[in-house]
Image (tube, rainbow, N blue to C red; front, top):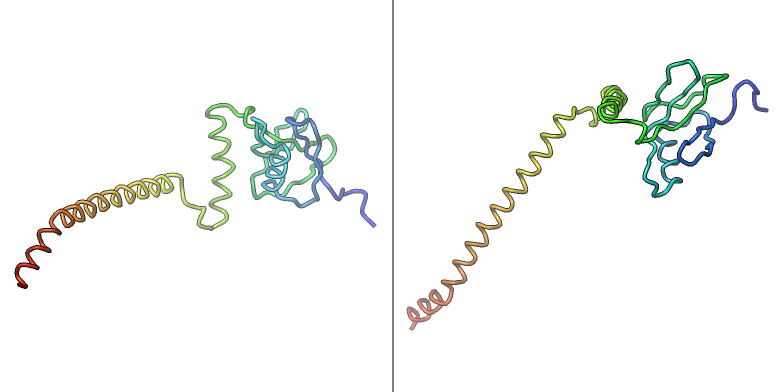
Length: 160
């Protein structure tokens, strides 16, 4: 029998659809965001993250790897959409939520943004080198094919 003091599910209110979605206790915020975005379909606004709100209190934001928690009476879980985050606030919020998660995980995602930028520059450089080799190889084949009839005649005349 379930304990009445702790609900077996959490409700997350989505402002875009005006609906409350239910998830089991212990669900990760990233999963909730992806499920709600999938249910919203191709609407312009997308859910970015989940936060717990209570009137008169500072909201509590859940990062992607955070497990959703019901903080008790008066607290509601709600979605935060892209249009609610403006300009630099959006960049700062996303940076503050993503960096601790990336550094704490210890995985290959723990690289900083500048390293990812360096990787894309290396990728572009490799593409340019590949094009250079393509043009050089194409030029060599063109020269070889232009001179092939003369080489065949030379070989034919020397064998007679």
